[in-house]
Length: 141
Image (cartoon, rainbow, N blue to C red; front, top):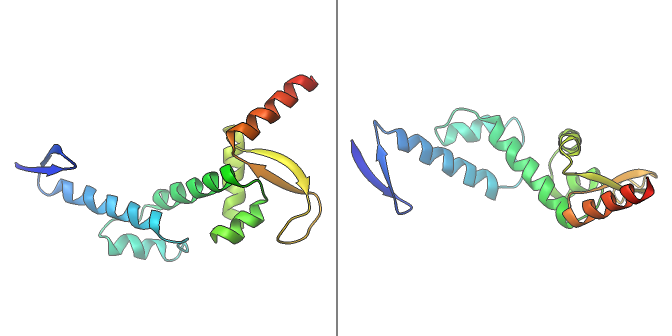
């Protein structure tokens, strides 16, 4: 066994196992720092890091970006897509997932700032906004 010191922690490297973990961390960091990576490019990126294709890494990052964007901006999925370059169809799936988990709410219906369509859902993940919506719902019952 070879002993290695990473991040001030004692880590034992057995047959290069830590090397694969390091590559995975480098890939995660690359995804975090990169603009949206198209789905057809994602396997190529993984391969360039010597890591098997892991779609979950990309999904987690783009879900995180969507969630974080909506913490500071109450807007439409179309506007988030325009600003983040993440496909709108994918963001609609993420929207539904976050709604089911209670992490995202529809705040209002209004005209879409991108398409100009009326009665479009404006959504938010901001905890204060979600709490105020919950308080309104409870008081109306």
